[in-house]
Length: 516
Image 1 (spheres, one colour):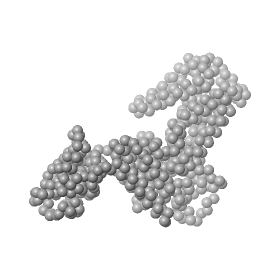
Image 2 (tube, helix red, strand yellow):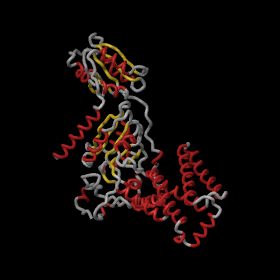
Image 3 (tube, helix red, strand yellow):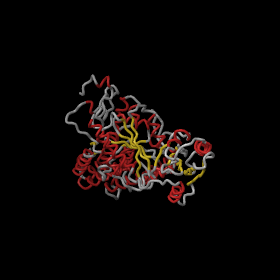
Image 4 (cartoon, rainbow, N blue to C red):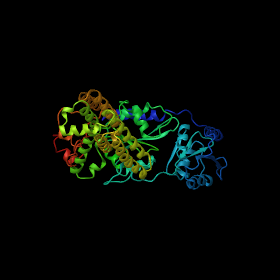
């Protein structure tokens, strides 16, 4: 318990240092000085509004509101702030005026007292209204937010046939509410950070206190505290600035737009990172097996989900290794091919002017161009361009004798299998090229060297200090219950040990079952 308290103290200190990094100046006691300073800070900003007024019963009570037009609820400002302050007959001294107004006069659900200019700037630019009072060096931040945000819809990139259809939006408050609705426990912790010297972006660190690994949490805050950048616009900024293996094409953080996926990750001991303005939520630590998992795996029969997961594994191997393996056999190891198959390939390649390796490389690039074009175009038009472009170009290339028919089949199969592992799209491109180069130069020997280097690299990947592939000294069923196959829920009574110190997921089974 003492150890956990020490870790919590270290973590809270890091949070404080992150949030206070840009504090420079306190406000003044004079109302005129404060407003002049605010106008200087928001110079040439026509949306910055100042509203002077005073109490009708006491002319010495002078106030000024500042806010950004278009981000506030004007009804709340008029009815719940200005009107009570103007008509109130409440008498108070300057020493107690701030607390008395917040407790007895202002009719706002959320108020915060501050003396820091940094806090005022952050809140005014986020839709809050700030009340300055003449004669006091404290300001009252009032919740008056009202700005447009996208409605909660199913994310296009993560369509579900079965299961929840909700997706995150660009509003961090909406995203937090989607998580809270599913995790109704006091153990859910949400810590706000402010990152970015210019954007002052609100970032939320989300985790379940009883399952999170405090060492990983401390390491995350340590890395975030080292970020010095003018702006954070998406969670990927934080993911890139805090990751290990910076030159690796493989991800070290998970990402999704679905609240149900985030909640399931948090329950296993992971930490979620939410950034205001981004619908994408990242999670750490990230295990390599997550590249092949899908949220629907847990909403359908474990028989079917295990089969589809095995298909994804095979697809990753085929889409990365098949072109290089084909080139190694065709260019260097004819004796390994069956005679009928070798005759067909040789006859098809007689009229092709290009070497097999260059031929495959060119067609892979053409396929990636068509895929990227289809992605960037409007959805209906993009799909048509991708399909028709592949058919027309492939057929024309074969008829013109520029490309052999087996190459077209190979590239098409490689592209289709790559679609099944969307989370590995980026590393697949680089791994495929490297394996293709090694196989074209050294044959199967180069192909095996490339695969060996790939496996070694994957085994050395880490996510916030946690190995992405955890090699246990001995095989235990509980360690592999959710890897290549998805076991039924009544067998998955323990969380992954690498993610959480609290490994029991189901008490009734976890207490009475062994770890075999």
